[in-house]
Image (tube, rainbow, N blue to C red):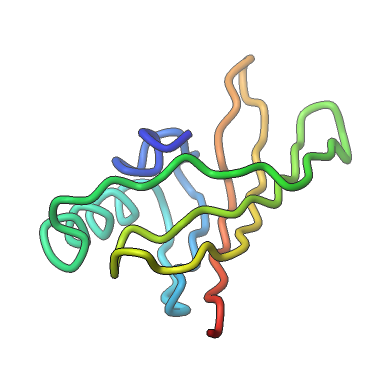
Length: 106
């Protein structure tokens, strides 16, 4: 899951992604560009940490809703924020279709 998010892979072509600063990113191609921009800039030299799964439920056999917590890669030591992820199973492959990242206020 982490490697897929690092590159924008693992998301369906028309996914929705809301960043921790409230930026809306539409589609896998735009997500890959924006993630690369982040890793070239303020997240340079970091990797996304593996998320900690809080809840997982299946409203339908082909849909999964996950609530996760992932420490943010920058600044170092930033607190984990909750994320809501929705995945769909397409042709036997699970892909994220929606991701919303929420900041934590200290």
